[in-house]
Length: 434
Ligand code: PMT
Image 1: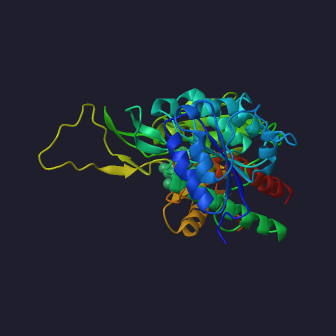
Image 2: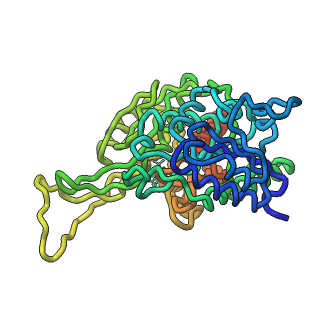
Image 3: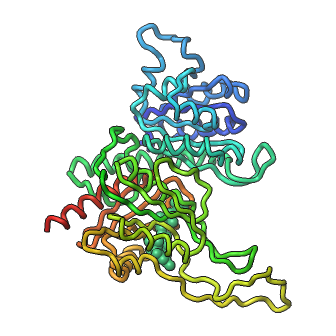
């Protein structure tokens, strides 16, 4: 049996030059056994013909909401109901914007609003469009609704710019679809046996309960996010690839659940979240000072920032000049903020640290839990696909002080944030009763 036998996939193709890749994707998914119903937007038809997809999928292609070939059904509702998965590849900034704002003005967007099926979005656009705050805000909103993204690749774009925005390759998108169905199957099986603390790496259910809980009302949550920068000279620094997405997702989730949120962030290029007190810092020392200044008033402290362990012993006031025989930098240990918080925390406070590892995750996470006196450590293997720095998703395991280990499947950083806050509340409230 083929791996996607019995599965119905609705493939939405929107109008970008990468629309041609959707033909290869249709062919791949069909060969894997899926029924692929293709919807082309009007702009997509400027790049590729419906006939191409009809020949590859052996099914009619949908282009017009009002065509209605079968008088017994309404095509977009019927497709929306039949889909096991909706995939948009390529997804332009325009279609992402429409979806994020509930606009339904063609066959693809009406089907998307009507469907209860999970939605996977593979964006493709110019690098500057991809990083535009309006587009990132739309994508974040969709991630909050539970939609999942297949990240675009980096390289030379059709427009001539070099950067992120190239549609993921058809093989990689097909792989993501296979992985999604495999994990959904595993989750379903785990659900049937009552195994909620899932083991194995997977993809989370995509639709979330949209009614926000206000269970953090009255609490102050202090979150750190992003990288730190340690100056070498006026033009150079030591840093890392943290984007701030994980920490910002936690701050936004806590805000939505009613908390008063203080977000201490290193330099990132994310839009400032509304309703959150944002304190921008650069170095470990600045982050340390900001955290310590707000520690006493915080009930829950969550340290998602990727903080330098070392910093240059001295910072040159002038740009270091090229030297014949190379350059040796002397580094000294930077203050460990989480450790300092762990030492100072009161019994009423709850402290969460992160562990970014590339191997032996459980070993190092448990060691950090103990050494830094945290209540929970969120372990992430930053080499795992879809996990770690810069991605919109993460693959994490929660290690709690009471010895409980909760392994989560791959999910959006926003969903990780909510799962973490669920755990924090559960453990914190239990701790207060004991
Ligand atoms: O920002 P993103 O692109 O979304 O990526 C998210 C992330 C990978 C950065 C995040 O999920 C994560 O793992 N953050 C912690 C990164 C890190 O510094 O890990 P660590 O194992 O080196 O540090 C352990 C803990 O000690 C962390 O909570 C860290 O904030 C803290 N620490 C580390 C060093 C230091 N000098 N002071 C600290 O407080």
